[in-house]
Picture 1 (cartoon, rainbow over the protein chains, first blue to last red):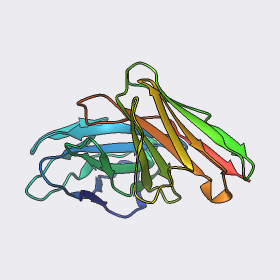
Picture 2 (tube, rainbow over the protein chains, first blue to last red):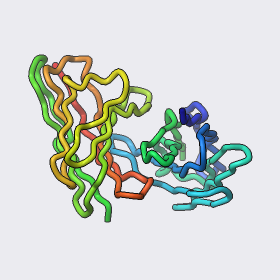
Picture 3 (cartoon, rainbow over the protein chains, first blue to last red):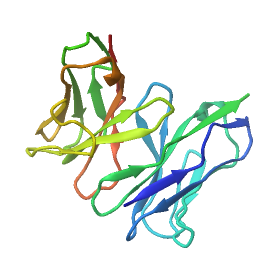
Length: 111
Length: 115
């Protein structure tokens, strides 16, 4: 079955540092890929998405590129802010429309 | 657009009682709704998938008689935790999706505490 693997957290960075959160997936076919963000005490929000190979999703300074050859969808941001502190989930959806989530990576940004 | 609400946001109930959580899509018709349970240290567990007007499809290991899901309309799904026990205490999150759209729109979650 489908699966998503994210790097374990927490990831702790200083403000303005570069962020990478790794995500790899296993799926049959060509799934759509997503990053969701969860702020403390809240539900998840869609951060960005990519629906086909080589697509780059971007939002709020975050980017991720759908790499079919490496089955990856790593999340990056050039300069993180304290307000980016949250839990980030990588996810995929295939033709069944039933989502598969990674375990989440907590990001802590210090001033 | 694509706002999903949940009610209540927090609920405390006594062991043995039942509690109902509502999930509503406010500005769109959700063909499919999903219910998740979030455990400490973040991981999301998909409990069930529900389509309007049909029975929910439960994931393996989720007791359908304990976690009753009703999806009576295109804008409302409910999760009822029956005969709740302290181990049912958790953060429950719903999400909704549109027909033919892969992304999901999440509710803000409900914190259930069973005493």
